[in-house]
Length: 196
Length: 257
Image (cartoon, rainbow over all chains, first blue to last red; front, side, top):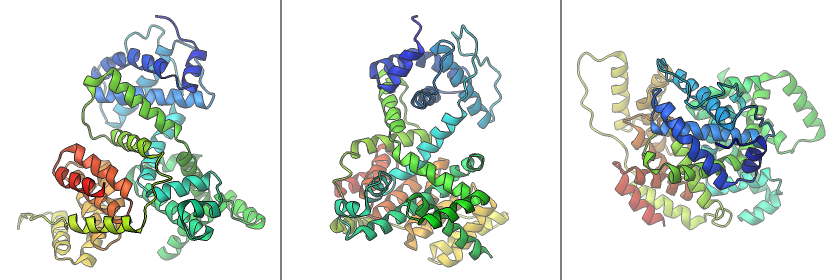
């Protein structure tokens, strides 16, 4: 198999090269699938695992922190193994089988994934609650964060004036925060926030 | 004492909001930053709200996830199964969002929309109150408290039922039955946001018995709030699940559309 370089990965992820990413996915999914299904998991777990790993690579590239000191295959499988062990620990499953994904000819490498993994978990939780807001709230929050003035927002969203838009924005944000904090998964992040 | 603490918490929220929106005078800003330097709770709230803002503006990760889901469908169609882990739920929501996002700035709800949603809510909302057969003997303390709270809920004595369900949840935070009924009480009291928080907790837990009901009442609650697009997304999820509420969800979708 041709070895893919760090530059190629960075380029493909930055440019969102669909066919390149699709090929990576298609090549590595079967290995991850075999690995997971032989280690107390199912096909859907393999899907989550490879996608979480790809999301981590995506973030590392985006943050200019992607560095490849081995083959991409070894890099990806090391992330998957790390995440899967984490998942098994969470489910309190004692692993009795081999946890080495096959074809890791270079052995295992250590890839730091905590930061990206935590961001990704928080990201999808917060976004879920964000999407559950009304359209007006979503537009309003996005516009204010994009520094559009309240007067302009009022005009675009048919509020009587800028002050009304400002008040509505506070209500929307409050609602979002309330829903996120009311989510039982939110407590899992509390400690991380304290450390930040 | 508790009231004082609650007040303080609310103030943190407001202070952070005003600070992040850049609506403080230079002097207020200076004071706020000094307070943050020595107040860990305030600092935590600030970090949290900054992160929320970052995530609101970060569409890339969701788009990439959406793309990965499409790739997965292409390369592994046979492994696609209906499943109830929350990650999949996110994906569906994300997919719906991506279809709707470009329209969202233009499709703004108006008064007639919200009265329509109110009418549909009234037409389809029915208080959840099944007949339970309770054992008259050998009831544990929990069972008897729950049964009493349920009877009060059923007889519309929400003021009596609510604190009992709340105490059962405090005692056992994973008591999803109590959370569901607390949500149901909030709906009856027209406190829809609070109801949705309880239903969300049940949905996330994937509780086998109350999941479907929670999704249904959450979708109805969302409709009541006039958040039509979000409600449609939720009714679509319910219809696709092909469960107990499928037909009702499909009817509502067609009425809304």
